[in-house]
Image (tube, rainbow, N blue to C red; front, side, top):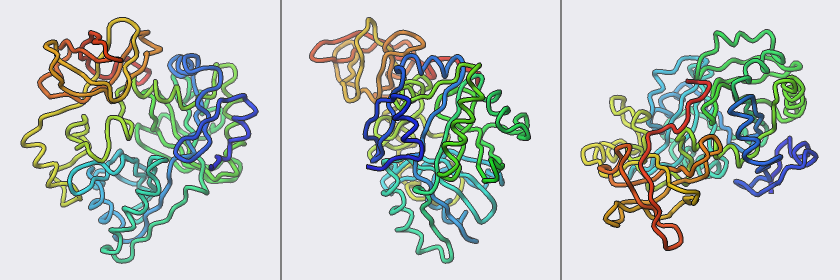
Length: 365
């Protein structure tokens, strides 16, 4: 089992530790609801150093990544990050990722922890056709810290007073110094709140983490585990690999058409997406259930005639709304908000309805 550079801090803080993506990670500290509410009302600090980190370099680096991914990197300038997807030829999703354009010949990729070895192998498998392009795995050298919440940027400005946060827009990043070490600060996140994700060398992770904790004390900052990270992203309807998206799901069936740029040149999986686009039968939407029963992944979804129409992708009791919510993959005609549905939970049918996403309004509006 791998440990992040912050593992000892989590342990001393009394975190409950679990195996996640091959890493020993904190799932909660004071409790999922307390941590969730801290991010929605003040600020939370996440150790997400288990994520995979790759560099792609060379004169043909952008050409290579344009072929490997669905979004259009021609739209990203230096200092910009872009949400993206890698597909298999049949249109299933290899992974979702964020690509940072450092310069015209240098790109930094952040991929899902459990997919990192598979992603690296997938990229390596195709790189031979792009002479001079280099792929480097920096996962074991780098840490990733997320600071999220309505007060996150105020806290960050205390630690980085020279950083012009007003000029740092969504999905933009800057390289700055922290105690003479270069760090990347990006206006990205997985909660729907204001905030940043900070990539830095392992040896600087603990000093920065402690500096942010100290700076945020009066603002009510809390360390946040993977449990609340999941409830936060689900309230926003954000995809999680292995739930809303996987190797058998086409992005057009998962509310991700906006990431698939059919107008750019050829990319792996393009033909499959074109075929699905012409005959789109399924989609992912939000839903809520009456009562307090919790919907779980793979539970079956039915129409009011008890005909099976799909399945639950993710489900939880929303700490913000105090009601059971989730995402489901169903036949498209049932995706209209307000459509009544039934979810089978341990042999019983529970009433609910399709809901529009996101479920909540946040500090991002």
